[in-house]
Amino acid sequence: MSATGGAGRGGRGGRGGGRGGQGRGGQGRGGQGGSAQGAGRGRGRGRGRPERRIEDARYSETVVKIMRNAKVVKGGRRFSFAALVVVGDGNGEVGIGHGKANGVPDAVDKGVKDAMKQLFKVPLIRAKTIPHPVVGRYGASLVYLWPAAPGTGVIAGAAVKAVLTAAGVGNILTKVHGSTNPVNVLKATCDALKKLRTCESVAALRGVELGDYNWPPAPKKETAETEAAATK
Figure (cartoon, rainbow, N blue to C red):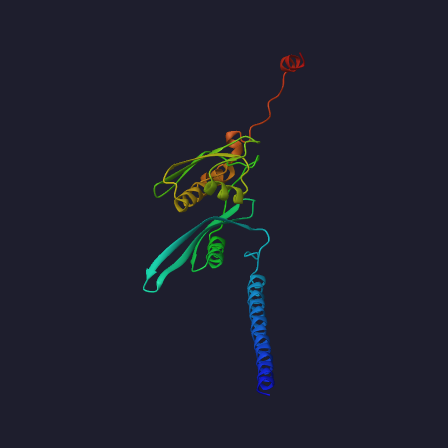
């Protein structure tokens, strides 16, 4: 009987072990549920942020550079970010902005808002180029801009090209001297673009008529000799 009782107790022990195994299985299922909830929260944050930061559809944004700064504190390091952003409509209006925040998206948002406050007009002529050569300066950076013929394209570095493309310039030659810091180069490029003047604006400032200077020039009249030479 003792053997039988021992077997019975052993059986009860086995059932207890089985219940224990089920309990552990329940914990495992709970862990899966927790990970699913975490994934749901992550997707929710991603969907909640708008993809476009500019309400006006005419303007587009370009992030030129993201800079990271680390501050060492007692608990470790704290990171902050700065964003250089260019905003333009591709038709002669452009602006640059600088934003700082603890996260990259927030820094870009601040940069876009800053750029929208600093929009200015760029005078363009036919062939999508600038009216005349010009030099811009900011700090230790010098930016040279020259007009170019159709088909040339935008020959420029990354920072200068971002500003010119956002402004709608299609053909231009550029050169950067001195500091190549993106902040200096962007501001020097804007300084150069703000110095541009068209013939009409200069005439208005001087109070004269363009016709007094034979502008725009009249088309050349082809004589019989030039026509004969062209046909040969």
